[in-house]
Image (cartoon, rainbow, N blue to C red; front, side, top):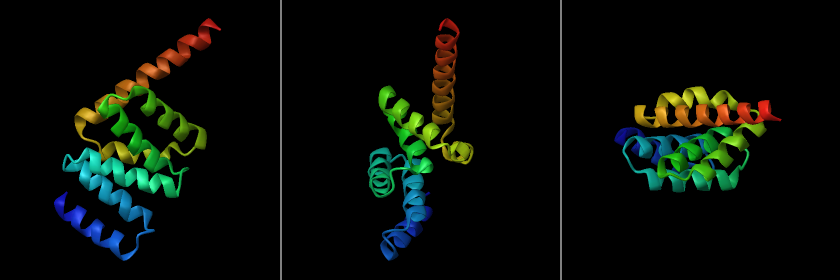
Length: 121
């Protein structure tokens, strides 16, 4: 992860508008345990392009990891509304096992709650 971070940082310096390099940099920071720094990079990327599902999904995980369930839910809802959920599967490969389980458990519980509420209606 440190090597990937250094390479991605150089790419961001060469082209500050390169979103893929910024995401790669954030992923490397996440892998190194620098969650706050990863969050800042993703927030900057999101401010430039608020409809990017890969950024929103990563931010959702970081919010859930910090215990901000409401914020995580809102970000996941936005990913679903955009309709580009194809980014979720590859992102799950990046997440650490404990965070992958957190995201899966959270999504499972939310899905059950939604189904239960629809059945009651």
